[in-house]
Length: 255
Image 1 (cartoon, rainbow, N blue to C red):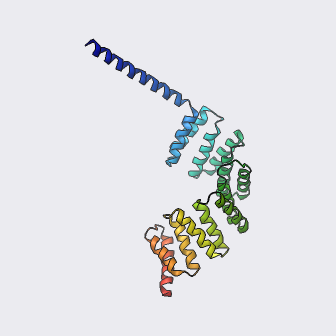
Image 2: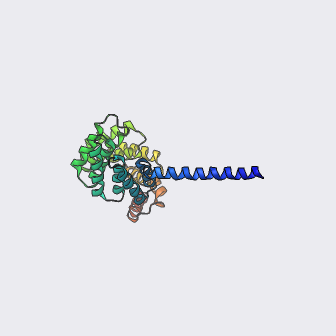
């Protein structure tokens, strides 16, 4: 009996110790900006932007020079369309750490969304000055997209080729390359790029649609019809569905 009592007391003591340790861990986590930041990233990846903001703000309040939290805030605000707030967060992040290259690229993307193209170009080029930046395909892609908006197609093509050279399976880069070739009326090359994008992400309806249109423009009506029929039932946008139906009618009329 005494042994059982001692065993129960031992178990209770262990439980009390575990509870005490857990409480201590939680108190430490509450004061740890990195932990709060990581929770914010978790919510951001879950597309729960409001919760992410709470944790990024808390992380930054615990350490006012914790620039990663400000970069996270910039991302969160941009996802909600709060572009001015996003710019302020990125600028503050870069005031603390001007060498944090990721924030330059992110800030450039927001400037581009705001149609501040000169400022965006500066940020993307600043990003590329960091030869150690591990995601260099992204500023090259962003510059290409910016140059397309300005109809600077040669520069756009030059930058998108660099992006693809770094990361051949970047589907959005392959797609943009196709778009650039299509604007240059190089339909064979446009089709090859769109095909590459579709091969990487077969379920992307936008990639498939642009490929179908390129085939149609190039006179390959059978292939265009095959693609349009494959995606028409999955398209939810009314305008795009109407456009596909018009393409199919033209193809059918040609016999």
